[in-house]
Structures are given as C-alpha cells and as structure tokens.
Length: 140
Ligand SMILES: CC(C)(COP(=O)(O)OP(=O)(O)OC[C@H]1O[C@@H](n2cnc3c(N)ncnc32)[C@H](O)[C@@H]1OP(=O)(O)O)[C@@H](O)C(=O)NCCC(=O)NCCS
Image (cartoon, rainbow, N blue to C red; front, side, top):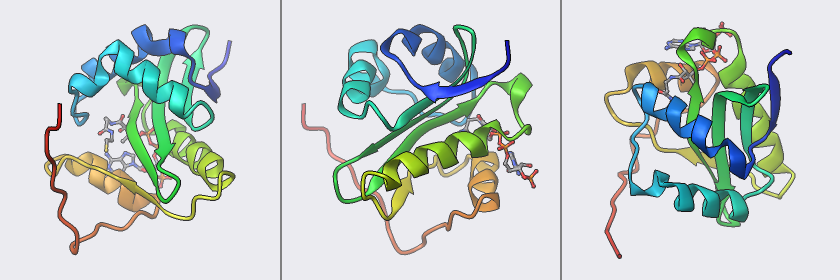
C-alpha cells in the first residue's frame, strides 16, 4: 500500500508520538500528552494531516486557527522518507484546508537552532521574521 495523505485521526496518536520522539527539531512538552493532542484534533478536525502507510504514521502536520491566523505545529517526516516531497505536501494540504476556512496568513514556531528546519521552511517560501519576538507565560 502506498503512502496516503489524509486527515489525522484520534487513533493515530500512538504512532505519531513515536515519530515525534524519534526526530530532532521538534520541541515536545506537556502539550503533547495524549489528552492534549486529542483536544487539539477535536478543535481542529479538518486541518491536521498525516502521511500514513496502512496504520503507520510517516508524517504529520497539526494545523489550527484561532479564527484570525493559522498556526502549524509538528511538521514531521520519518527520517527514511525525507526529501521525497512529503513535508511540502503536508504543509500545502494544511494551508489549503486553513485557507478554505478563511485564513489568510499562517505562522509557525521554529526552535532557533533547528537550522535544517529553517532551511526547509525558507525553501518552500516562508519568510523568517526579525521583527517579532515570542513571549510566553505559564497559566496553569
Ligand atoms: C523538515 C521536514 C519536515 C522536511 O520534510 P521533507 O519531506 O524532507 O521535505 P520535502 O521533501 O517536501 O522538501 C521540500 C524542499 O525542501 C528541501 N529540504 C528539505 N529538507 C531540507 C533541509 N534539511 N535543508 C535544506 N533543504 C531541505 C527539499 O530538498 C525540497 O526542495 P526541492 O523541492 O528543491 O527538492 C523533515 O526534514 C523533518 O521531519 N525534520 C525533523 C522535524 C523538524 O525539524 N520539523 C520542523 C519543525 S519547525
């Protein structure tokens, strides 16, 4: 069976978290525990995608919006399947889905020392911003 790009499903979590844990460049946190990811999928059921071969998840992108801007998280492609177009296809599929919801601009957060990730995003047309600094606060 070939690799299929399809909406990510709740039952994909186990295979997806394994993929995320294996890859450098993804910052995993408490927001990646199962109930948090399931809540994200429930809130954004039409903008999270998986590249899947049968039940094995080889790639992911979690897209969501707050109604104003779109945000992409956890773009990931299994190391053995990189540089074959899966990453850019996942991104474009996610952007098309966000656009169909009326979203006109998307942002991503990239760990500052993820040079390979930065090069990938620039290669597919994303612009690095020097005018914005991310600030965060724990509110739990
Ligand atoms: C970033 C990542 C998702 C790219 O996935 P991919 O399937 O290899 O990407 P694609 O094959 O669609 O590549 C699209 C273009 O970017 C280029 N590219 C991909 N990875 C690159 C890299 N590390 N450096 C420079 N260019 C890169 C490809 O050569 C391709 O260009 P081309 O069309 O001219 O050949 C994958 O490398 C990955 O999972 N990395 C680890 C996790 C990560 O860092 N995610 C991003 C977090 S912000």
